[in-house]
Image 1 (tube, rainbow, N blue to C red):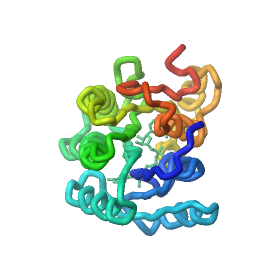
Image 2 (image 1 turned 90 degrees about the vertical axis):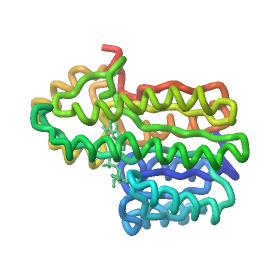
Image 3 (image 1 turned 90 degrees about the horizontal axis):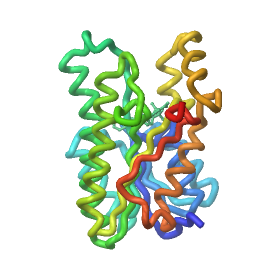
Image 4 (image 1 turned 180 degrees about the vertical axis):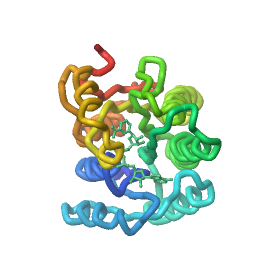
Length: 253
Ligand SMILES: NC(=O)c1ccc[n+]([C@@H]2O[C@H](COP(=O)([O-])OP(=O)(O)OC[C@H]3O[C@@H](n4cnc5c(N)ncnc54)[C@H](O)[C@@H]3O)[C@@H](O)[C@H]2O)c1
């Protein structure tokens, strides 16, 4: 099950954190991988690791908030691999600021990368996937996304973007079902990556958060990659427009 031989997958924000483990996990299932991030040089160790295990991978610099860069990279990727089957819209930023202090610039930066970037990549990918009447788009949201999710103090701009991803996922799933493209979202809880480490949460805040997580620990990136693999696979053929919470039970509390 979950075999991805002959599939071509593009991962955004793939140089580190969860993007890196998603790229490695997709490669382990047999997919050819295009690793993209704001710095191509920093993606090199990821593609070297894939190649050292017998996989096929290339990397490109791609800022997801730039339509020009997105188009150039997707064009080149399709030129090299001849097709595109799977997109993992993983790139994202987070910086904490009280809502009363968020500037227009802060807002635009967050929305450009965390929400507009997801749309630009999904739209470009869907044009390719439609040619083969098969595609899987996996958008990385967050438990901090409204609705069933939780509010996070200091994250008004981030939660707005992540909530937007869930709405976008549902609409794209409806529009692109007839094209053979399944679109789903994953909403991780707290996962041990450079993003969370950079947030430098005080110990008391971390302890309070862990209290609310039934599994009493933060997650490993690979535990989210497992969901990516399922959603990327043929076995997810009847799954579209859904959001999967990988959060150690946080939202069940
Ligand atoms: N770590 C968590 O607890 C957590 C929880 C919920 C959701 N998420 C989401 O998971 C995704 C991965 O985050 P992570 O925790 O691995 O963080 P990370 O900071 O380690 O990785 C994010 C990656 O995105 C890249 N990136 C940033 N701006 C970009 C841009 N404009 N264009 C292309 N790439 C860009 C970064 O260079 C980095 O490699 C993000 O969308 C994040 O919001 C993370």
